[in-house]
Length: 613
Image 1 (cartoon, rainbow, N blue to C red):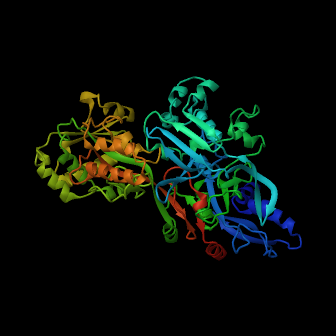
Image 2: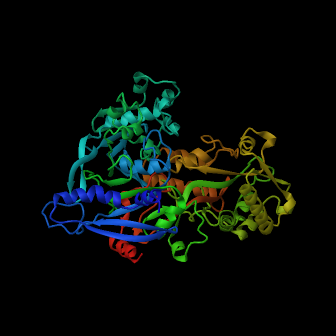
């Protein structure tokens, strides 16, 4: 085996963490030598030698440890397929791997719970909203610190060194930085809810006086006030997002760094973090529990070993050898893998929904009965299987799982229901599809779009007795599709067209308000305002989570219930494919970063399975 192959493999084992942490721990107990075990694996046709260093059972000591009843840490073994270290600057990155790391290295005002779809306290222990619905006051904890790895090791763990507390002015700095155009924060417009943010973002270069006009201020170290330009209940969800994570101003105002967080690592300066984990090395290969973190973990992971790999197939080989706990297999062809591997596939529905949009000024789809009929005639499961090989999740209402205010995916809406579709057709003004005029069905120019349109057309032929020639599929470039479906596009507008929508933040308002509302969205359907829009606006101003949920249930019923107005026909959510070892339990993040402190590893089972090879 050549030196490059050896180096690549050693980078994907737990050797780094063992040598940096456990050997240091052994120095405290020199009388008990480590146990060195060498194993040989065959991975992707190559014979690979793995050396593992096992820490022996230490002499009992009254000093509290971080590991209950075990002297071996709980390690989560992951991989990232990439050539370089992810960008972990909260205000600058849109790198998914970087967002995963930010979620674990930097505390937010709040944290999104992926299991409950609720926003929970984090740096902010509590908050209240003023009577005007625009002033949010956050009361911060005083026991979360900017930390760095110390030179001390206790019970096999590097002790976190507190530099200073995370304070309200750190959040002020992060928000001002995100609003400033020169920072180039992706999706900075989401923060335009904050007074003055949009105005500052329009400036070529913001002065300190300009930044001070943004509606965020530290009343003291533990009290933060944010003023919005309108009532917005979904702002609470936004506070959990990565680009609102605080940063230490003193590091980014250092003349040598120049507002570049990545330079902190490259220049060998201390990497200050504030989350449940801290980085033990500048290459971001090893994360360890922050020993000063005050909030209880939901899982038991103590060390995260991140293995940087060149290709997805290498990750698959290592996963099959049980050297990795979870991998993203979305880009892999799994047609040739074993049945046991397929049994461990986890399909995670994403936040991009594909749907058909109806023209309310169309001679056909101005009738809600026909919109309901054509939607209910679409076999979504069959469509997903034919177009994406099953790698998508069928949906039948608007707000997807994984966001605040979402309902279960199958709770409201008819989905595929041929009998209901035919009944709605019979109750329409046309009575029969064959009596309807020609239908213009506009899609983008991709091959998948054409395949999907043809499949849907065939479903309409089979379930509604339409004729194929009656439904004209028009393929156009995507830019033309957008232009020709604008509300003011006139005769260029088709009767129905394909589109997709993705979450900008994990809240129902991003769907009901930003996509569907008759005035606050683009309203490509040219839908007149109705009761549903009043409810959407009411939900946007309702802070109580239970009340918001109840309102969105009404919204979804008015849109997609038996008598719903059916402005769109939801089709499916694209999904990611994960391979998960049977000793790992966790709730995948469908938006934002993975939360490693919620992962649980059955250590005994992992060791047993690995010993079997």
